[in-house]
Image (tube, rainbow, N blue to C red; front, side):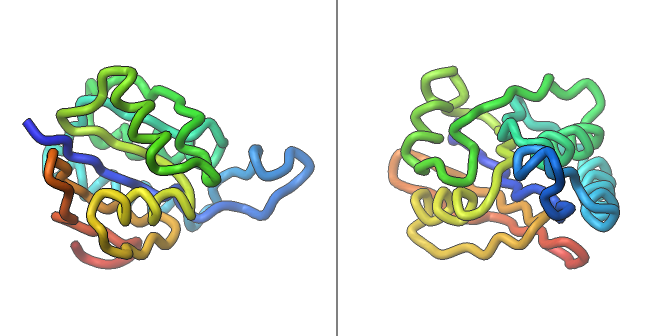
Length: 155
């Protein structure tokens, strides 16, 4: 079975406060957009085999909201290799090392990693506004974008 990656850039976040960048929470609009995405995914009986998130608050909140779309979904696993400044090759190697190299996997991450990861797998630039989900089917011979969902838009 090929690896199907749902790469999701976290929802819109509040500006940095006393807790710094790592403590930035989703804004009201970000929460609403991620809840709408979760509803849409739930209507499609979406269910990833594994869910990974950057350890930053806004990514963890996004992962929790979207996880709600799949009752009984697996627990969210935190992965430092999903931080914005990470290299795509390191994120992919980390997934492989923990046995997530196939099946259906959700990655909740940041820019520029989301776009660079998609480009690494598909060879194409892919826009990632806050709250964008891009589904990539990846195989031994490369990958292709099979779906994009942008906040407030159709697929």
